[in-house]
Image (cartoon, rainbow, N blue to C red; front, side, top):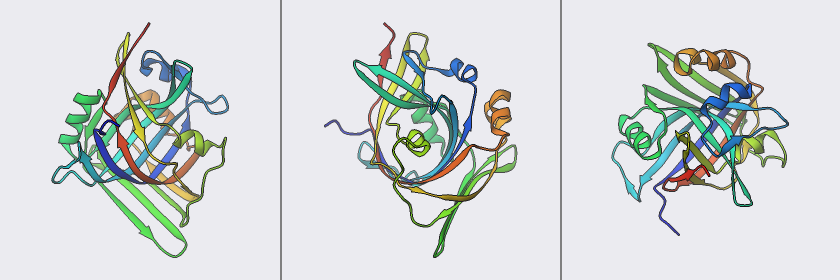
Length: 240
């Protein structure tokens, strides 16, 4: 089996999910992919989580093993022969280290940006509280969730399955070429979210169309426990 380009542990993923019109997303759709939907509805998700034990080609990079990420993503699928490969397209990924942004943007064609970030977690006998923070225009934005302490398996056919079960990333290269890479991890258990609190200067980060979407209340918020993950080297998909 080929060596993964990156391995890490993704922990405590807060996922806030917003319905969105397909027309907004089509401008960002990589070639040869199509929009994916759950019960006929398209979604964008604001996701915050922690990278831990990060290695690149099996090597630890000093000061780059543990860091936060917040991303905005939507859902697509690509037909490879007879197999549908369900994946995500990242509109923007925010991290606190410039070197991470540089490598991801060059090697994977992603849209990483670097900002001041922090996180806090609190665990008691009944609940887990998770918060991710990133600074925009001198102001702390945040994505917070309070959830039940013990995670459970998601139900087949549920929104939790649709949002979490994606094992491919797709990027726009040009009108006739897309980038793709595989992400491997076991199925994630889900902590039931009791309450959430979100503040995001979405218009400044993502533009007015996404700003209007993220001003609304999310239709759902999940807290996935996370797991060890591996990201394979990227390849290209060319239009027929």
